[in-house]
Length: 346
Image (cartoon, rainbow, N blue to C red; front, side):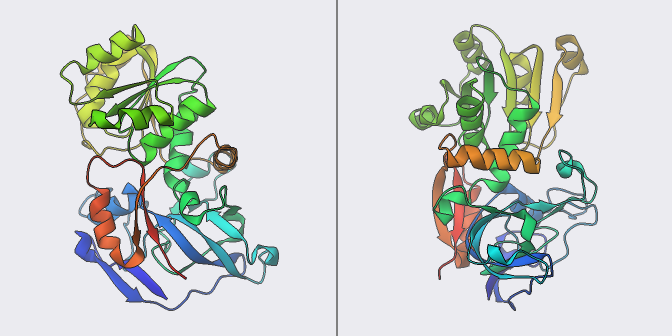
């Protein structure tokens, strides 16, 4: 099969197109012919060594074992079942829950043995992938590409909104609102949980698109009056912040939060380290959450919301598998709206 491997820590030249043997499913696994695989920050940061020290990176302290096939947002069709797997799955179009874990229901994402497809396991930058049968779900939409953009970004966004306990009528500030997680944060917070959303983007040319996704108000982080703009529109501080930017908007986020407000972060594209005056936290009674991925129950609720049309795919651009280097390079450019997807033909 054709596949793209990460052969070491570094730039996109560490991505190589190779020929690999088609993997064989273990007894509780199925073999999936991959149709689409969306790109996430996680596989780029894994390649770059951004998750760890001394260039070691991944979801485990020891780092990734190279070579590794990345890719975690995967859709495809089941073509073979292991001896103990449900043979009725063969021929079904599926989307993959992106990690294994021995954690109890509701705590899967924080178990010490949580292992991620595309990091601890070979992932979807390939024509075929094997995965546990019970972690394969019916696609929420008929289209492979559209169904492939939710697994990691969508689950992370859903978990973020649940963590802050979003309620109808509350105001939530969403940073990085045009990105993969941010564009889903807007939809989930507004269309599923009934909150008002203030979307933070770089280019105000994106205002119309953000409002189509469910944002009530759109601001640019480039505005010199950003804080005043937020407070004036909301007639006061916001209830919660969903942040994927990190340092660049951290101080602003805490400033516009109400007393007793909630701050949830799932990414740090705008800086991984920041300065914090602890007095801001305790004097304003702010609750802080770190967030990535989520639970199987949340995944199922997300798929249901997608199938009902409450949450829709946002796709910026697609690339063929062989253009993985170009796709990851493009992914890091600013100004995109939504996801970048690798497509596999045949």
